[in-house]
Length: 589
Figure: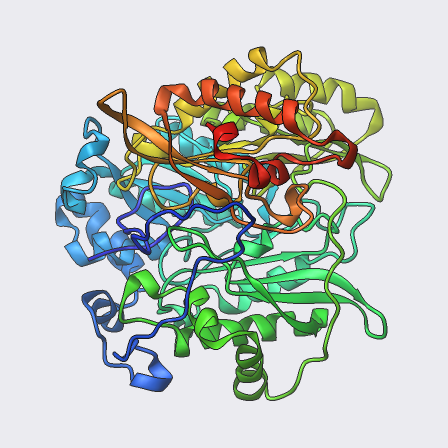
C-alpha cells in the first residue's frame, strides 16, 4: 500500500517515476510524456469504476472521511496498537495525519524496509491554513498544542501549512477540539483529496494588488472541503489563487491555479492554469487561455476537480496526478471537456498575466493600501517551535496587530503594523530569529522535513541546510550578489522542497565520494518560477555525475556562486538561472 504527498512531511508514498536524470543545457518546462499504454488507466468515465489496485479498493470501501469517528471513539482510547492497518496507512492522512519515521533508521534502509518497519508510534499532524491566513489567537493555539503535545515542534511548510510532530493518537481528539474552537482544521490536509488552497500572503492589504482572492478561497473551501463527492480523487489535488502581480503562489506547480489578470473588456479576473506538479516526473502547469470572472472561480475550480476525479489515471499511482492527463489530452481538449461536460458554457478567451517585476516572497517592510505596513520575515528553512510561535503572537499583539500570514516560501508576514511601531517590531522579530532583512542566501533557502521525521527521506535536510546558510552568510559576506540565490534542499527523490525550481536544488540520495558511500545530494541548477525573478518559469538543469556530500553544501554553493559572479554578463543583468543553463559543465562542478 502506498500513500501520497509532496509537501515537507513524512509519508508512505513512493516516487512517481524512476526516470534517470536528464542532462540539459537549456531551460525545461516539462518532463512528463503522454502514455502509449493500451491497458486501461482506471479512468472512471472511460474504464468504469472497478478498482485496479489495492489503494483504489480501500478508498471505495471508505475514502477516509469517516475515520475521524473511529479515531475519536476507538483509537484514541485503545492507543496505537488498536489502529486498523488500512486506517493507519491510508485513511488517517485525510485528517492530516502520517506516522513519522522511527529514530535511528539510516537513509540506506529507506528503500528496503516496509512503511510499518520505518514508522514510529507518533504522528506528524498538518494544520491546514487556506490562504495562509492566521490570527494571533490561532497562532497561540497552535503554539500551545506544539508545546503540550508535540515536544515544541513546529515547521512552516512551502504550502502555507504548519506541521507538528510527536503527536499521540490519544491526544488527537483534544487537539482537534482546540483547533476547531479557533476556526482551524486538519480536514483533507493530506490524502487523495483537495489539499490546502494557496493564497496570496498579502491578500486584501497590498497596495498593488489587482484583486483580493479571499472570497474565492473561502467559497471553495466552505463548499468543497469535506465534500464526499471529492474525497476519492486519483491522487492529491493542489490549488492556488493570487490577486497579486508578483504571482506569489507558485502557480506553475499546482494542479489548478488562478492568477489575477486584467481583461481589456471584462475587467479584473483570473487566468486559469492546470496540470502542474513536481516530484520525480516534473511538469509545469499550462494556461488554458481562458478568462475566469471572480464569481465563477469556485465553479471552474469544481469543474477541474471533477475532471480529475472522473478522467484521472488510477491504475498506477505513479501516473495518477492531473499533469499526466494534461500531457495526454493537451490544453485544447482539456478546455473543451471543462466547458462542455462540467460548466455547460464556454469561457471567454483571456490574456496572460504580465511577468512579475518583484519577488513573491514578500520579505521586508512594505506599505499596505491603508497606510500601515506589513513585514515579511525569514525563519531559517521554516523551522520554528511552539515557544517561538507563542512569543511571536505576543510580539505581534504588543505592536498593534492581530493578523499574520504564512507563505509558500516557508516565510511569515505580519500585517497591519503602524509606522511608529515598525522599528521596535523589526528588532523584536529579529531577536526571535525572524529576520526581515535576511541575507540573500537565508532568504532563498528552504528545506523539506528530511530524515528526522520523514519515512521517505534518505538524507537529513534542515540541520544541513541551516548549517550551510550560517556558513555561507560568512563566506559570501563580501560578495555583491545581484539577486537572492534560491537553495532548496530535499531529503529524497520527491520534490517537497521544489528542487527543480531552485537556482541550486539538492536531491537527497546516497552518493559515492572518493570511493565511499555517504549521505548526499544530486544537484539541479537553474530552475525557477515567475515569482522568483525568472522571465519564464523553467525546470533546473541536472548535470549527471554532479553530487555533493550532505555536509558539503556550503562548499559547493560557495564555489558555484563565486563562479557565477565571475562569469555572468552584468551588462544584461544575467541571473543565476540564465548563467547555469548556458555554462559549461566544468563551470558547474
